[in-house]
Image (cartoon, rainbow, N blue to C red):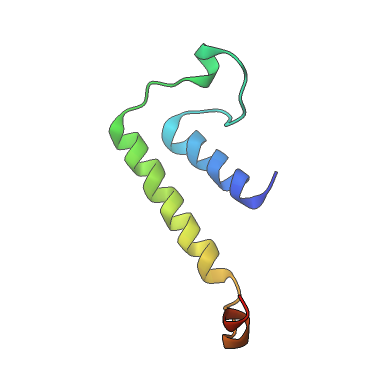
Length: 68
């Protein structure tokens, strides 16, 4: 499992009460009734996780930016 998949799964478990983000081909397992405040908390956690991961990545040099 990639780092982002792990982070997203942990967020789903903690904030949404969803055990896994894998498709299980069962409506009762794949569809969830979730409160808007839980969704907001999950989105906020994902945003913060993305910011932390982005801040830890090496910054592109001017030549790398110019060559993109």
